[in-house]
Amino acid sequence: MSLKGKNQKFKVLRGEGETAELEDYDLELDEGMVVLDCMHRIQYEQEPDLAVRWNCK
Image 1 (cartoon, rainbow, N blue to C red):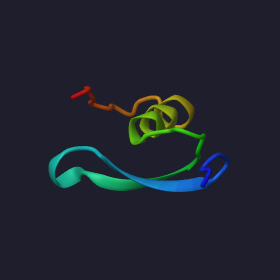
Image 2: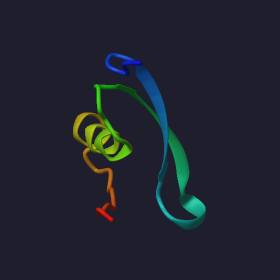
Image 3: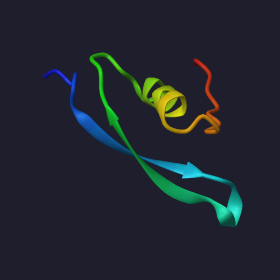
Image 4: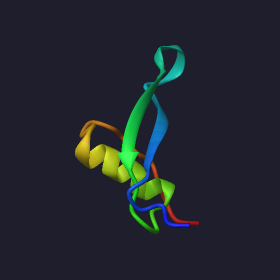
């Protein structure tokens, strides 16, 4: 099943502590994308001030 072209909604927790809120982002997927790819695309295309912590384990 190909995910290419499928639209997916992501709920991202923005902020810290009691002021944190969930925000919705819609994203068109490409084949082979993982969640980190999606977060980077949201950051690049929709929310340049979105901070994303990541590492490879």
